Image (cartoon, rainbow, N blue to C red; front, side, top):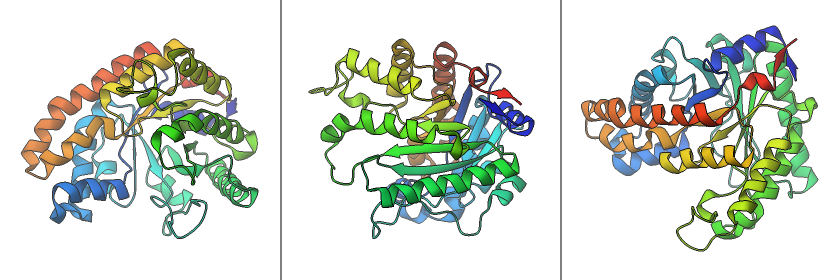
Length: 326
């Protein structure tokens, strides 16, 4: 896959010395509000959530190749990041409208691709909820939406990161959904790997729910280890695009084990955008005092991200194995 010189340079800014995207994600908004409110309701506001994101950015981006954040609560995260850390910004409104069928994506109303570029971002990121089994009238709207963003990013010379989160509106039980997940994830990868969407990097869920993999599950498992490995390999071979894994809210320890398992399975993934697994346990100390939060970040937070980096060195392959400059 070839990209413009401008996109190529931005991708270098987002990657580490090995060409791997070792990025920190803190673009959460709705889930961040819930986390903050759970610990301390009076901290659930723009100022305090922004301060929290600023602390995380300042302390941890010195160990990350880049940071993904937002323009709602992330202004301090943008300004306080390490000078060597690249920047990705989210373009979509958090969550989806529960009153509408299909989990349709929406953009932040006062934001544009141009404004994202003017803020110094190296990429545009979109989150898309996608179910390959939804009716065409829903999925065609989503495909058209992604096309528009892809061409906007192309015109601006910014890489387009598409984050795909699978679902089934009729299945709520986690174990039942785990049985459906591999096909849903892999088929979505195939759809949006088409060059018409102008996607440069896919941000993906693992093809299996690791909580239901033999040897990783505390109870009854859904997939044997060999079945899970086959799904990881199939996912990797389903696209010619670089792809990175999202942590999906699992623990830091499980995420690292997952990356090792992916490597053993033959997955040629190109990095991570790791969020809550790195910093979520800092919310509680933050609501007690700034000093408690900074101590946590400088000790546990640093350990979380540097140990993840060590795993990436052993498991991920360079983005530039799949991308070259035009």
